[in-house]
Length: 155
Image (cartoon, rainbow, N blue to C red; front, side, top):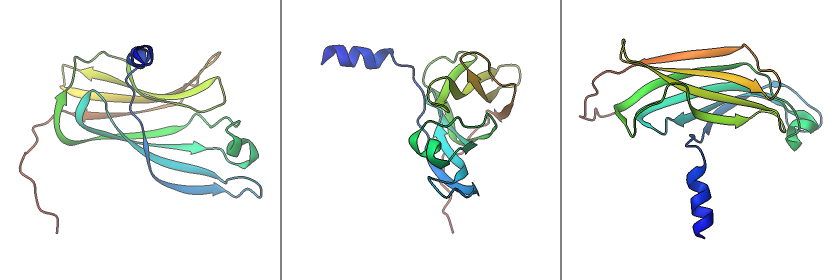
């Protein structure tokens, strides 16, 4: 039991995404359709920040079995959703989200930078591969602003 807890402590602190929605892009007769999914995740070290990631997921037989390689293109938008608080000091280029996009060799990841001069958090999404990554990427930035603690009723 202690060993399992110790191993869990060694795992990197990455956010887990929850799916917000999806749209089909290509109909497949066998297996799931190709689609674009929209996922949301909260930055695990920065309270008050949520990121939305849209990306392609390959369907068909290979996609249904988890053997297909998803495309490298992705889009990201991060927003301040509450008062921003840092759980621990931030490291530039720290991975905040990572997901496998092929059976073994390819991942999509989001890294965070802190632009101190402009008091802004910058998030970059890109895809990498064991041998060769992709230059395709997307970036979003959040200026750190004061946040009103009073809740506004929704009408």
